[in-house]
Length: 325
Image 1 (cartoon, rainbow, N blue to C red):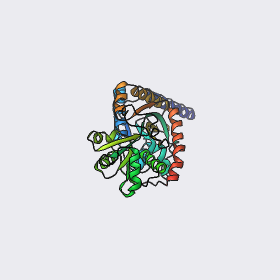
Image 2 (cartoon, rainbow, N blue to C red):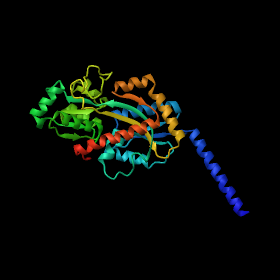
Image 3 (cartoon, rainbow, N blue to C red):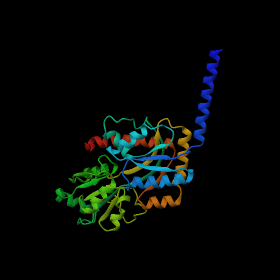
Image 4 (cartoon, helix red, strand yellow):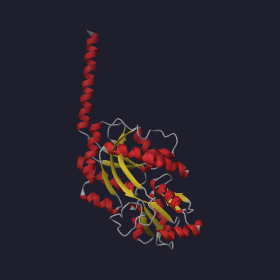
């Protein structure tokens, strides 16, 4: 009799737990959600995260908070999410740095970039722009290359960090053009953009968002973009392909991911809500102005994309001999 009662009690507990879980998924979100961003505030990744967070909050009636956790090429932020409770309340705005290049750059990561995460959606892509300090006596890419070859000690290039997407594009630029240029890594786009405008580095590949104030003030000049077509918000800027440098390509990307084990119902809801946010015209307009193109697709699409990016950048990191800061 006691055994039967124990079995019955266990059965009821399981039913209650299952019902509670289903109820929690159906009512998600019922309190604030945190989006971890692996870079400091003010850069393109931060701009994207805050726009999406605000709109998701409007759509769900809950607060979506942006939490900047910069450091170690995104490892700190990514590990925090990998170890979080898989309930949909701690998300990562992942990117090419965390789930494209980083896994080939850092040995013995405390997480598996594929197995420890549940992809939600590829939010946006953005080409890297080639920017120079406006005091530099160059107005074209050809002139920049010529100057770098004749005065190699006077032309250094900056990036948002070692192993970042823009850094890898800069390394490709060096390889393709044969210019000798020292890489100067920064802790995010904002300090790099400030030093570029101040003349402490001479050129930089980067998403354009954090550089716009310096472009508008005339301290930074845009020479080219790595996209296949000219970017709609900067139609006067030629592509690297047009300039005969088609191999200098690279797209910076960002997307939302959750810890592995997050219920599929929550993943699907976040995917749907984010797709609807990215389809809003005012969101498209704001992101385009910042040099960002909205993306989309299913969780499966994003999962395949991440795996392809890991495969793509692994040999590049190895051949360039890039080491983390």
